[in-house]
Amino acid sequence: MAFQKPVLWNGRSFRGCIRKKWNVLRKGVSNAAGRNPDAEISPPRVTIKSLPDEILLEIFNFCRVASMKAPHLWSGRWANTWHQLVHVCQRWRYVVFSSPLGLYLRLYCTDRTSVRNMLNVWPPFPIDIISHHLEDNIMAALEHRDRVCNLGLYPSSYSNFERLVTVMRDPLPALLQLRLVGRGAFDRVPVLPVTFLGGSAPNLLSLTLDNVAFPTLPQLLLSCKDLSELCLHNIPYLGYISPEALAIGLSSLTRLTSLMIEFKKEETGTIRDLPKSLPLTHAHLPALTTFHFRGLNEYLEDLVARIDTPQIKILFIKFFLQPVFDIRQFISHSQSLGPFDRAKVEFDHSTVLIQLAQSEGAAPSIMELEIGQHAPGQRLRLSSLVQICTQSSSLLSSVTELNIIDSPSFSAFIDRMNNPQWLVLFDSFTAARTLRLSGEIQWSIIYLLGGLTRESATKVLPKLQNLYLRKMDWRDQLEEPFLEKFIAARQHSDHPVTWGFDG
Image (cartoon, rainbow, N blue to C red; front, side, top):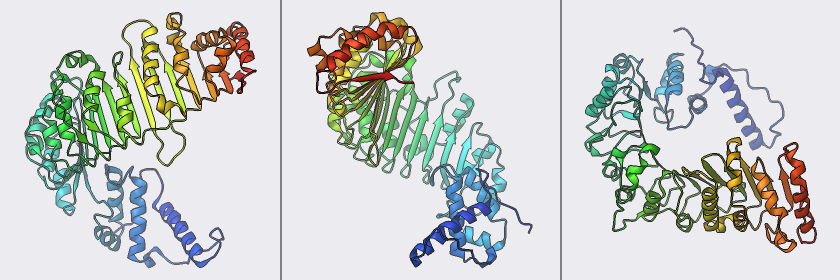
């Protein structure tokens, strides 16, 4: 059999993988022998045939890791590689096939794959499928229900979606990951029935639904004891699940680490009018570390009241309208959120974005809130920002660097700002030593600071030491008198302020 040189997905040759693996093994042996690991050691002049099977297996596993994004995700790149390895020689074929689990051997099926031929040639390995058109070859792969592990389905038409629903009425007992995306161009909303997957997916680890309605999803979730990732994108109105029903479904997901709930913006008005469900049903999510939400604050308020998330470290929330949600509900439920040392507030013409970050720690904490504003004027947006920062003061009291910026489209709202509210906002950042201002918004803040009395100037951001502005040509001359007045007032405090241009 002719030798076929395997080439990995990122362009590195198999020889390069072996060389890199040899260097790792060489340094390990040198350290164990007490020698300098950086000393030049010539590898023994032996052929690759002299390597024992366990070393070959470790090298093959190195190739697998190099060609996959993660060890238990889509295997398409690795499938192309191990197919080449088993064609090198009979011995390599034996080594690869002797470790199907360790090497994550999968049969990778796409719309262009001759599935029936592939299934007849290779051993009965697990099957991964990615498809847009759901042709007969994909349906042939789905017939092997006990072997399908990962599914990525993107139906190109509503008729394809209906065909998929018909085929997937029975369980897929080996299914680990499912991603189902409904196209926005469908003439109707794709809806999954209660019979989808036979109502059970006991081994499922990851579930993603995008623009797909699945009103009975909580019933399926009750069977997914090992689920670690749940992503619901662009939830349509027909797929609305009440906070109470969702909490019931989540109650069995004690291993869930990531939860994403995102409603379609154009349909939230209808959802907003739906009544709240009582009484409260609680779900304890001890492993949840990441939570994403996009929608109305009424829904989030009801849901948060029903779930316990003590380990939340990464929080992303986007409100479509002016929020009245009390962020303290999340803060009180989480023992791992914050403290933060960096904060950024960014304005544009329709939203205000608050980003909080922790720069130290093995697993830094992140919180990001985005507030949408449909009514014109900045006054309401700033009041919402002040409200959230006041509620989050326990997380902001350790922030040492505060950045406030705006986009060019925001300048039209500058004159409508209620300047005194900035003083209330700054009260939440008592430990801030650095303040960076950028864009038109720095005018309003500098004018406000320059108009303070000496006593008031020392109370605003009391630990401030560095103030950085973005250079704005001729406008800097208008700001300078106000700026110098604030700097002079701080000279007699325990924390005088120096200023300069940033970039």
